[in-house]
Amino acid sequence: MRGTWFSVALAALFVLAGIIAPGPAAARTEGPEVVGEAPLGGSAYLIDVYSPSMDRVVRNRVLKAAGAPAPTLYLLTGIGGGEDGISWWDDTDVAAFFADKHVNVVMPIGGAYSMYTDWVADDPVVGRHRWQTYLTSELPTALDPELGATGRNAIAGVSMSAGSAIDLAIQAPDRYRGVAAFSGCPWSTDPLGVALVSAQLVRGRADPMNMWGVPGGEVWRSHDAFARAGALAGKTVYLSSASGRPGAIDQGGVPFPPVEAIADSCTGAFAGRLAELGVPAVHVDRPQGAHTWGQFETDLHDSWLYLAGALGA
Image (cartoon, rainbow, N blue to C red):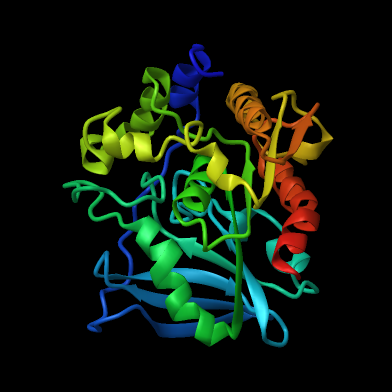
């Protein structure tokens, strides 16, 4: 994958239209904490958490496990951050699937065009992004007592956030025992990798310099998943993608065959990198699938066997 034209093509194809909606007004508090909660039906709740690093409240859909203590699975969505009505909650059976599972499931709302990372500077268009701090520190600090969580965590991402999930598992090695990446591209800092990431930010009208500074520089290199893949040793790693050929797995969803075919190339390359380093990983390369929520729902179901083992769920 690295050094091919696929990354450039993915930069153009991977980014779908999204909107950035303002979050709830920031609460006045010194540390991260739960500042609001509302039932959504069944085990689902909308929980507002104040983020000191971003100085605002972030909304999270949370499926609470029946009976504490329980581990926690964090699910990240795609380029629109779930603010565009496209997410695990909106497009899959996530609530029904986890209804009989002994795990808390946390689905943050927000982070459009953020790559779910900490930016080095505020951006005049997309604002302040400190998502790595929020996801790896602030959110669990606030939620774990509320949920009676065990402290055992896993994280999964799809499309744009598939690379984010891998990066977060590398950046916060003590936070996550397992990571799953569905139909995305772990990042590199070669020219094509930089082009891939930058194009997604530009689509959101953000300045890539505000994320990690000079492209290919020190901060960018610290997020190079290929260079730092060895940090995943000892974790459960699940990687999945498909050929891009539509099939029954897509369940009538709107297909994006070129996007999935390129994600398949990226995912295969990263699986190969892990194999080179002797880092065990589950790699699922599906013969059918065209970047649809039907495919992603299947990925989530299939990955649970492995993530549950990592979590002790």
